[in-house]
Length: 77
Image: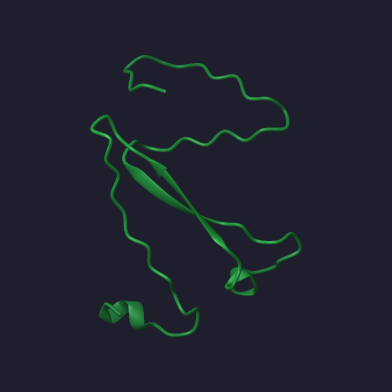
């Protein structure tokens, strides 16, 4: 949907979820199996990357894969 400064009304069906993403973003989506109770159980499940380019047809982002155990991200690892 194009950028607008006016209020926009969007109809969403009962079996749908509304997701609003700012232009120029890249979203990693974890495709986890039903029944998982924590993100660590899904650590080896596939990731889908969704790209939402802006008006200049660009999108930027970083993907950080945490090991789930250490705090190495604090030192830039």
